[in-house]
Amino acid sequence: MQDFVQPRPKTETVRSRGRPRDPEKDRLIRDATWTLIARHGYDALTFEAIAQEVGCSRTTLYRRFPTKEELVTTVLEKTLRGVEPVIRDDMSPRDVLIMLVQVGVDYLSGHRGAAILNVASAARSKPELARVFDKHLANVAPYYVSQLRRLAPEADDARVEFVLHTLMGSFIHHIAIRRVSLSQAQMEDLVDQAIALVSKH
Image 1: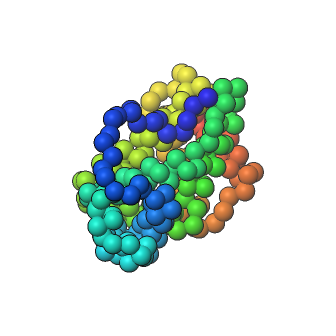
Image 2: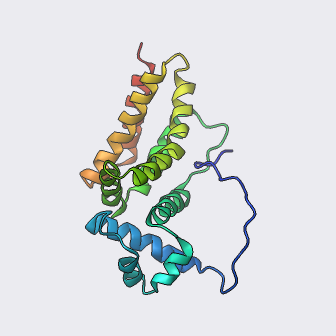
Image 3: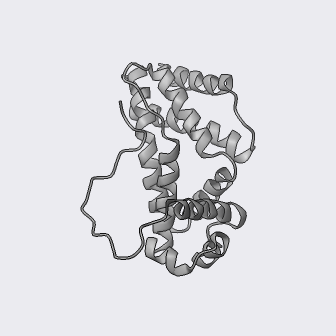
């Protein structure tokens, strides 16, 4: 059994004095961050705007996130962990890929699709955000790649990368850009097209 996102190495941390973190407040901060980025873009995302949306002080946010990039990093990671599937060892590569596409669809549902597009757009001109976004993608891509490699071990890196981005780009287009849902049959069709592409000689 493997997790969708590779866990971070455990490190010892010293908890600061004071009240323990409120999980509900953390969830509200994540939701507010997604909503504000979707509505107004990354540049308009400020701690003041989040605090107003959540109903907390800016100090509460600064205690959790020293920078805006750290905030976005945490929001991306925690949201992804919230939709991660359990991949059984006996699952076929096709079934795993279908599950991963479902995860991607769930992740981009609602206002998160628009927010991700805004983050990706802003990352083109902001190196610090580009590093955050690239790291986020790097947490996801290996799980697709491992299944594509199982299907076509002879495929070269360029073909696997092309198929990976074609598959991910397809469901991102439908969910985030067209803002339409995908049926189970449609997700299966996307995966079958990817399998045909990666297996093509």
